[in-house]
Length: 362
Picture 1: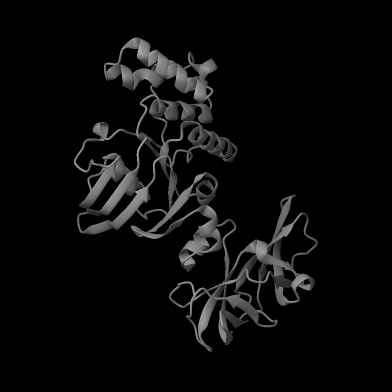
Picture 2: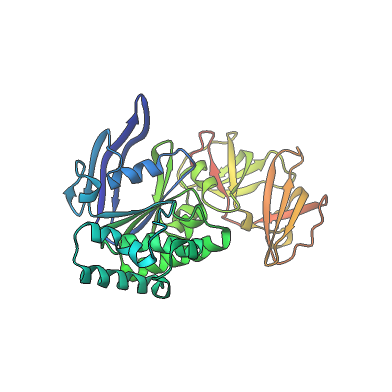
């Protein structure tokens, strides 16, 4: 295995620049996930690492070697795509070993690697089947197996679970996480699904418009986003954003009057020294940080519009007095709130985050 380094990577298609001077270090054995909205450049960046795209500027280093001008086959990486791309007339065993056979590897070595990969992916009982006899999850495991038998320096995954249904996606997330633990391999994974990013990654790289917005561990990005984009993108359901005005400042704590909700000012902790009394800001509150008003003594009045009962958890979708500012409130178990009811909710102390008018964390 090997570490990956990107130095000043840029990529343009004609006059359109889609990747902007990206510098990134991925450690040996690290699982890094590129995440962001469609069109943010995450797949282009992955394809640049693999050699399928040539950077307009910058360097790609794998294991300390500059491979920017190397062909994909010379870089020692293996890529798993969204499409399984299995040969329908070949068995699982033949699909797994095809690339090795075409490379001239002796039959006994091919058989040894195929057997080992099949054991890791629990495909041993399926080796004589053809793709049409496999489920979607089994086909994706075969596609991953083709990468494993190459024994690459790094694995590159380009939205490999997008074609699977919800249940299979959960199962395959677990399989990929187990695979990383077993192989200890360097893995770079692209997805637009932030749930996949949160559950799989050692480190998440959030991209927007070809630039790195923030990178860090899943929990760090969840708890300490640098800006309103990252705060809204990481987390499901997404963070609530409520407009307000700074009414007082006491050291690293500010009091904020919320524009669309009746109730007392709420207190928000600042990271730096930004903000002044009278400034308009946005307050970010995650759905799980609302609670019964009696618990924290802060009561905001809202109107419940829709209540979703999901069994172990419930979501109340409510609005402020302007009927336009929406919030999502998470409750444990079954909610006793009726649609259309006026409710009072508290906010967990220290949980709210403040952002200025440019969307940057205060």
